[in-house]
Length: 96
Image (cartoon, rainbow, N blue to C red; front, side):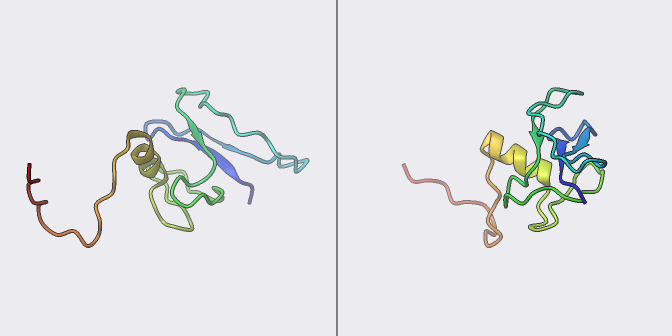
């Protein structure tokens, strides 16, 4: 299965195979989606694994780490951190 790149926007369904099916030559990953101008992703933003055999769905998951590819990219771009699985309850107010 050839590697692929997909649009980082959940509102867009653009994806492209990164290998020519006839010649086997690799195709450069476009930096920007030609459909909506959002950044393109060719590796998982969480684990760095090459995107291969990703189902065409709104919230595709990495086959290695199982994280939502687009959500993880958005978290990295906007600096939003995932809560720790050990965290339970509200954080205590900071002491000033």
